[in-house]
Image (cartoon, rainbow, N blue to C red):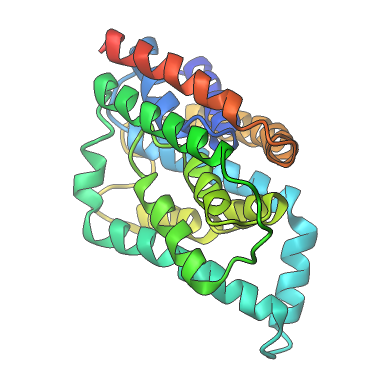
Length: 260
C-alpha cells in the first residue's frame, strides 16, 4: 500500500465511520478496487479507526470533560450513571473481541459478496428505524446492553456500527440527539483498547506488512474527514434523514455482490 492509496482509504474510513454506511465494508471494497496488498490491512484498519476516535474526542470534548470532571468527584451522580451505561454497552464487543478475534479477522479478506450482504442488512436496520417514532425514553442499563449487542454485530464488514447502534437506539424509543451521542461515545474505549492490544501483541507488530508513512497518511486523512463526518452525522440524525442512507447501502451492497 502506497501513501496515495492510504490517503484514499483514510478518507473513506473517516467519512464512513460516522455515516451509517459501514466503514469496514467500504474499506474492504476500497482495498479490492485498489488492489492493495492484504498483508498489513488489519493494521491499517486499526490505525485509521484510531484516527476517527481522535475526531470523536475533539467533537465531544466538552461532554467528555464534564463526564470526567463529575466522575473524579467519586459520587454516584448522573454523569457516573451515564459512564456506567457506556461501560455496560461495551461488554458485548469486548467479549466478542477477546474470544473470537481470529474468527473475526477471517472476514477481512476482501469477500465482496459477504460485505454486500451485510450492507443490505444495514439498509434494513435503517429502514426499520425510520418508522419508529422517538418516544424520548432515556437509555437505561438494559437498553444500553441491547445497543451494545448491535455494536458487537457491527464488527462484521458491511454492518455499519453507527447505523446499527443508532437504529437500535431509535427502535428502543430513544431520543435522537441522545442516541447519537451515546452511539459515538460508546465506541471510544473498545477501539482504544483494540489499538493498544494490537501494538503490544508480540506476535503481530503494529507496523507489520505496511510502511510507516502510508500509516501516517491514512491516519491524518481519516482524522480530518472524520471531523467533518461526525458533525454532519449529528445533524442528519436530528433531522430524521437516516433513511436516505438505506437506499445508498442497497445500491452499494448489490454492486458489491455483483463485483464479488
